[in-house]
Length: 349
Image (cartoon, rainbow, N blue to C red; front, side, top):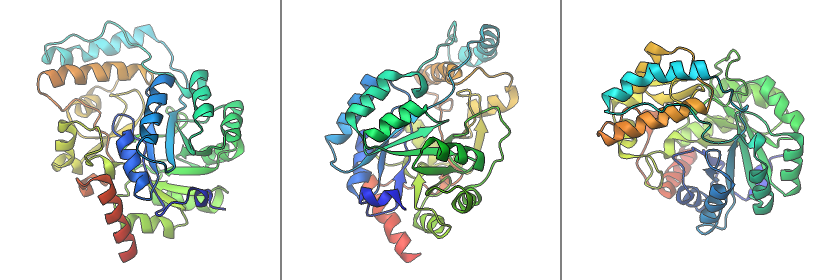
């Protein structure tokens, strides 16, 4: 059974919930165009999530997806964190700034945020999705009781089995090509690095749940290929970064439109978890100075501070410019026009 039938979508396409890039305006535009828009509330608190849901609902009466981070609570490791800040100090100094004196847990995991659960049960979004892991049985039961369709990002068959056992309704098969953070449940476990299409076919054949293909898909031919492999839908993120509705800054957009789009790097240095980013000065430094990166999202506190200091100096190449391997195919179109173009390409394919 395809759970997306109940959403009455015109196109089997999801705009990925990209924290820091997706906006209520983007999600609403995508949903109004007949696909499934998404907002990401993992990097905010319940009050921020309430505001984002309200802003999206003010722009659309169509279903949309609300995405949460379910990472393990970070360890506080003072010695390692101070060593990391010391290693970053020359980068800050080059921007006439000093690193933070200590790292902070800049946002909470959904796993330990009862206020966020209360908000979602009250707001009853049609779709709720999870990245980095799975909520507790009680959280899943509460969301199902509220009528939410539940999705979870997985990167291998073991994670898919855990999601099915937990009561998740559909799987987002995140291939290694995908931009942004790897959804792997344990970032320290060996990564099989399965590509999108291999993972999609594996999960369709063996996972026992509907599968959404995600990673490197940028156009209608890519969506059609995913459907031909048995996916019920495709999730596209990098394809939407250049849309005017995204909150990507000018440096991010310029990098995406440049030769930098041809070179993406998987790095922990920016945030503390593996994530695919356009190659820039921060990823280069991370490759050369990897070391013992503090836990996510504590390391991200330093990464965000460095980017902010650099931007004051007019330097935009220290940002988290997340992008997948299909980045050179990005198009700077309004979201609704992009959906229409993808739909036309699907028909042609």
